[in-house]
Image 1 (cartoon, rainbow, N blue to C red):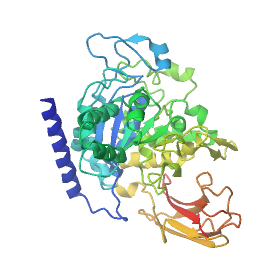
Image 2: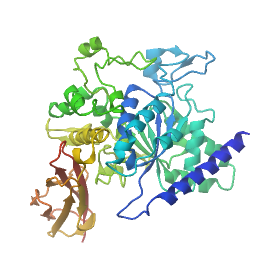
Image 3: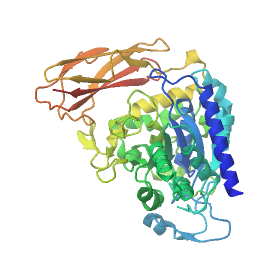
Length: 507
C-alpha cells in the first residue's frame, strides 16, 4: 500500500508539473523561468514573519511545497510519551530530556494562507503571477515533526519532496531550510533506498544532485552532517551561518546605527502593520501576542520589551528570509553563482566540498559605517533597499495600482558579460523604465569584494545611465571586475533594482 501511495503521488506530481508548464508563457532570455522552491519550516516566530513577507513575493517564484518540519528548537513528540534529548549540545543543555518542545502545531501555515487569500485580489492588481490561495493550500504538507532530526520514516512532506526531485522537470529546485534538514534528508534517504540497488542508481543520483539546491540557515539538527553530506556530496548546499544574524534576533548588535531605523517600530507601524489582514499577523516587539505553546516567544510582552531595551513594534527576527531573498531576481544574478552576492547574502565555495558554498570569517564586505571588513555586511548592506521593497509590497495589499510604488525595470544595452584587454576603455550602457513614470537615479559601482582584480577602478560618469572605465595596466589576464548599475526611483518608498556586468581581462 505504501509503494502504491508513493507511486500515485509521484504520477500526480508529474501531471501537475506538466499542467503548470503548459499554462506558462514560453521561457526565453527575456522571460526566464521563475525558480522552483520548497520551503521547510518549524514554525518559530521568525519563521512566521519570514513566511508573511514571502507571501508578498510568491509571484517571483514557483512554490512547489510548504513543508512543516522539526528542529532542535521545535518538535511535536510522538504522542506516546517518548522522551528525547537533543543531539545538539546547546539545546541538550538548555532543555534536557523532553517529550515535546515548543511545538506551535501545523495549522499556522493554512491560517496565514487564508489571510493571504483576503488580499490576493489586491495583490493581483500590482503584479502578475501570484499563486491562488487554493494552490498554496495544496502545497502544505506535514513532514518529519515528531523529534529533532527524526528521519527514520516516510512522511507526507518527505514523500512530496521526493516526488518533486524525481519529476520530469529538470530545472533546479531550491530547498529552503528554515528549521532542520531532517525532512529533506528523509526524502533523499527514501530515494537512495528505492534506487541504490538498481541499475538506475547512477542516473538517479546525478539527476537529484544536479537538481536539488539546499539553502540552509544554520544546522538546526544533525541530519545534514550525518546523512546528507556523506551520502549526497554533489548536492549543492548554500550554508548561511553568520550573515543572516543581521536579519535575526540579535540584529541590534549586528546592524549599524544608520540602518536601524529600517527595522524600528516607527518603520513597522507606518509601513507594515496597518496594511490589511495579512500584515496585521506580523509579529513585532510589544504587540501583546504570543504563539501558542511557545513560552520563548515573549517579545510581545511589554515587560520583556523594556528588559531588552526594545521599542514598541520593533522588528523581532526574519532569520530565514535570506533563503528566499536569494531567489528574487532584482538584477544581481546571485542564482548564477552564490559567490556573486545579492539580497540573500554572499558565499564562498568550500575548499573541501566543491558543492558547498558558505559564509563566515573568510567572506567579508567592507562596512562603510564602521570602516572595517565585516562578516555580516554581505547581507546587511541591502537592508535599506529590502525594507523599502517590503513596505511597497505591504501597500500592495490595500492600495490600488496608482496609489502604490513599483520597482523600476533596469536593462543593459550590451551583454552582461564582457571581455577587454589592459588599457581598453569599457563602455557601460544601461537604461531604466519606471512603471509609475517616476524619475530615477543611476549609480554605477564596483563590487570589489566579488571581483578578482584587487583594486578600485576609476568610473567615468558613474551617476549616469552610460558610464565607462579603463582596464588597469596592472590587471592580470583572467581577472574579473564586477560592475553594478543601481537604479532607484523617486517613488514612496523609493525602490531599487540592478544590473550586473562582469568584465573579464583577456590577452
